[in-house]
Amino acid sequence: MIHLPIPPAQPLVLFTDLDGTLIDHHTYSADGAREALHRLAGRGIPVIFCSTKTFAEQTYLQQELGILQPFIFENGSAVAVPKSYFTPKSARVLTPYKRTGNYELFSLVNANAATIRSELARFPNLRGFSNASDAELSDATGLTGNALQRAKDRQFTETLITPLHMDEIDPLNRELAKRGLALSRGGRFHTVQPVQADKGKAVQWLKQLFRKNTSGQLLFAATGDSPNDIPMFNAVDLSFLVQRFDGTWTDIDMPGLVRINAIGPSGFSAAVSMLLGE
Ligand SMILES: [Mg+2]
Image (cartoon, rainbow, N blue to C red; front, side):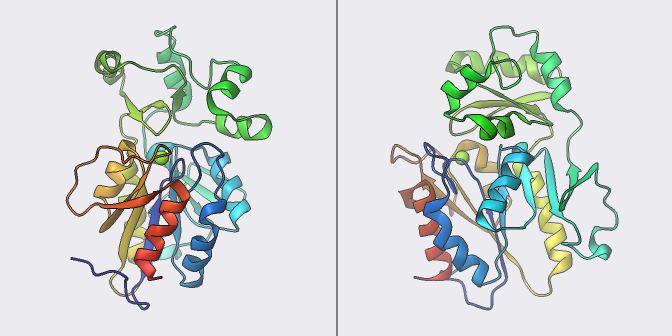
């Protein structure tokens, strides 16, 4: 049992989902979380994005919020780590697949977006970020211009804008499984991803590095809003579920899960207040 708020000397790492958690479901704005992020930075607590969003989207958001931290992108397909963030000793066994800007990128999966796109060609009724027009994508997401292009810049996964009916999901999942792929449900869309892509595994991967880099007992917490956050919740000590945009909680039954009585970024901020005290 972890008592809240945590003591000021307790080292903590906070993983967070983005869509519908740190950023508003409708406006995509993180403004409602800025004060909480400022408090976390003041306590030296890293905030680790863990999201379906792309590398391009998350680096843009980090710059906007003045954050330079590791993050998990495309649903756990890969992890970006700022150069020299971890000591060379702790990271020496790892080889990035790419170095770009301030980050080294590490892949945790065996497939990429090109593989997924060619497999999805068998399902011509499914429209995703790669085969829909910009106008269709704008209608579905509300994103335009550069923000839309950042969302389209997918390296490992394909987000579908075609709504799936409950009875379509199992058959599609079975077909995808034959090809090493799986469906994941976010707050808004389904995403087709490599079967190894797992927010939880990516969280575990980063936890090892944080542990090797930190003396003392590290505590890990997470905030999220949808079923695709369950693996992340399972990988941490303390989980907070914020309300979705309609004021409901997604149906997750997990011992110890703390349900926050607030939506999206307000919920994130309330979770931070519970962690750190008012
Ligand atoms: Mg979400």
